[in-house]
Image (cartoon, rainbow, N blue to C red; front, side, top):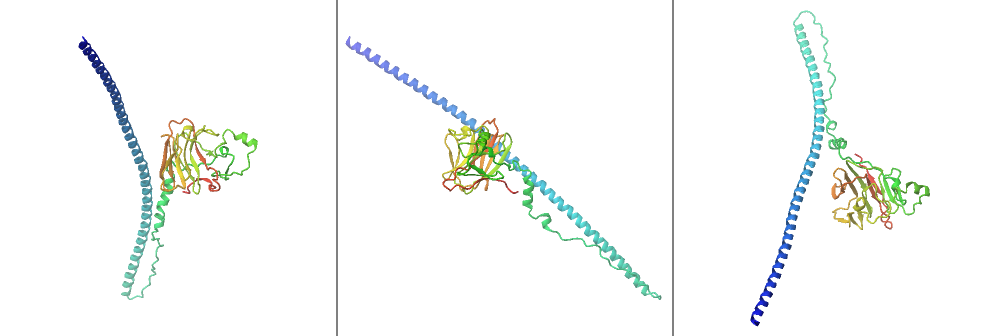
Length: 356
């Protein structure tokens, strides 16, 4: 009786162990199945991403080809016009010289006939009558071909012509004084701005009239020009400064203190801070490694592709690009010359307009 009871107890114990073991196996299988599903989903997502990325790069390649094709077409057209102008001048000059050659030859033949006539008169008994035949050269034709007239600074000349067809061309923008923080000063053309701590305070009437658009916490301002579509490019001089910030802002950007002056609040900017270039990304800035500290920043706003990109405007090397997402409000060029940094950051922030 006792042995049978022990056997039953052992059997029940073994069954319980087996059940527990099977339950653990089932749970392990479910967990691994879940992991496997996540793995397959991740593989599918990665495949979709790879196809999308490949397609985007192919689109960019087509855009680059199209841009260069436009340049090639422009240069071929300019070359054809220059060659045609050269050819017309050549035909005109050669025709003039050939005509002069014909007239000289005709006079030469007349002179030879006169010589023959005089020779025949010598054989006559009568006194010969002298013929008055003179060589009168036709007007001279300029045969000097001056390279400067057709070549000269050809590349510079083409570049000036090309500037008319550039897209995007340099956008001519000016600072908007109505948005400038009260401690910012501007030059008369509204193309340079600097921080001036001892600047006179605004009158109450001035403060009230521009309060809604004027920055009152950060030392910022915007440009007068606003953009809603197309592609736009402008350049900002930042050389000699120890701190600055430039980029693009949404029209409804807060003019007062913000919890975060990043993309989260409608700002897409590049900055120099503590000697390092930073892209003001959210939630924290991204430090950009550059081989040469830029003295002029190029800002390229592409409203169609919803991107803003920054360049070293001297070398045209790209620095950073933001994807802005769907923007429904107008966008404005944005600037912050920063404070004087105890006298080390007194240089102005200036808009650069190429002379070409």
